[in-house]
Amino acid sequence: MEIKQLYREIVNEHNLHPSHKRNLDNPTMVLQGINPSCGDDINLQLKVKDGIIEDAAFNGSGCAISQASTDMMIDLIIGQTKEEALKLAGTFMGMIKGETTEEEIEVLDEAAALQDISHMPARVKCAVLGWRTMRQMVEELNRQEVKDADVTAAGSSECGAGPCGVK
Amino acid sequence: MNTLIEQYRRDFPILQGNDVIYFDNAATSQRPVQVMEAMRGFNDTCNANPLRGLYAWSVEATEAYERARETVADFIGAAHAREIIFTRNTTESMNLVAYSYGLSVCRPGDEIVITVMEHHSNILPWQMVARQTGAKLVYMEPLADGTLTDEEIESKITDKAKIVSVGHVSNVMGVTNPIRKIADAAHAAGAVMVVDGAQSTPHMPVNVRDLGADFYAFSGHKMMGPMGIGVLYGREDLLDAMPPFLTGGEMIEYVTRESATYAELPHKFEAGTVNATGAVGLEAAISYMKKVGFDLIMGQEELLTKRLMAALKEIPEITVYGSSDPTRHCGIVTFNIDGCHPHDVSSVLDTEHVDIRAGHHCAQPLMKFMGVGSTARASLYFYNTEEEVDRFAEKVSKVRGWLGYGN
Image (cartoon, rainbow over the protein chains, first blue to last red):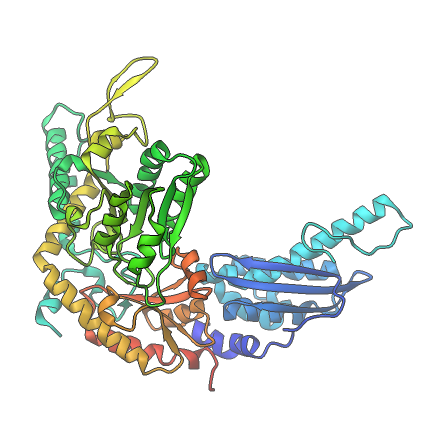
């Protein structure tokens, strides 16, 4: 897809009228994701219960591709288990690297439209910012869980302040 | 179109047979066929390692390399060719001054004075010197239009200053700084004046002695020369007293197992095999600039900048940074479009074959000072045309629509 068409058909709508640009009450975890060279800056919030991403939202500023990609990602991960979200992230990253088949990226729904970003090296960082941040958060949550399980089976599962902003 | 411009434009193969509007000249300029031919001539007739061999090709290579040095010295008004050090680029030149001069002279409590408009290559080397020596980095700040006032210069450059280092032309604002005035203040305070000439040398006549520059750095690739060749001018007495920056081959006089004595200027600062092909290309670029002449270069750039700024003024959603006077822009027009991130602007313009820079332009402190995250920048050179400016403005006026506004 030519980039103007990509903006017209997918990116502009999610950038100008995002569905998930807001703040969550009591998020399980908040993490800032930045692309220093572009000034893209998002604040991703996840609410996770029993291993399922119950809700997600973001705030921040940056180019249309970073904002739209994050918004589309949140469409996909709400209601998914953490493992499914990580799998989707793997598929998205694979798509951006040009390593996936058309069938494999069907699960990405609208976000699959960003496939052609793989031909625009300068914009790859923008497209993956939300996904990279989400993956980091889920991995951190998993680490916390393992740690909690190790330390005590009885303690509360509420996370302490972690190195990447666990609330 | 100016027939002379049209004629010179034909010397640039990359500008032929396509509709690309190349407005990223402040990042790197295009190269005329004359520069490529000169480099090829060196390659095809006398390529050998200069300054070493005792055979004809090496002697010829040495002559070509040293002739390029003479040409550069003459071009910027240096007193002697031995005051010209070939480097890779402006960044390396600035690092040479910082490591070799800055680390040698700065003591705790001394001040290094720069401006907030500097390119990172004129900030980071001084941060390093300040960190290692205990000297303090002091920033001069301009008015919103880029003007450095006399009061600012006088209040920031005090007797504590050891080094004052300022860009001749800002790569974002395009404003030409009052180097002579700043140099006089620096010298009165007992400091040396370092000038980053990366953005000025391609666009205006430069005389380092008239400017009062003790060090002056620039890159070949922004003035139609090849990438990988840059220049550091340094006053001979200063260079003489400085330790080498890099050590190794060709910069020595005599080496024992324990120590070495260094070669005379300028070779003391040119360790290892030199970029002779690049120097020959730079010499050809200088010859080409002289042929075109700064009257034509500056005249065309001013004409185009006026036209571009007038056209952008017609688009209400556009903010142009720096002075409202086009003659104070040196062909650099930095702007933003309301609601549009510069990277999206550049991406959609790319599909229209328009090449501009978008981002922080390696000047993050300036972006912060201006209160913006990033900007778009169109930078012109004399081979650009009025027709390109008109087409550019027309395309820029459509960007908001392409990015979903007003549809």
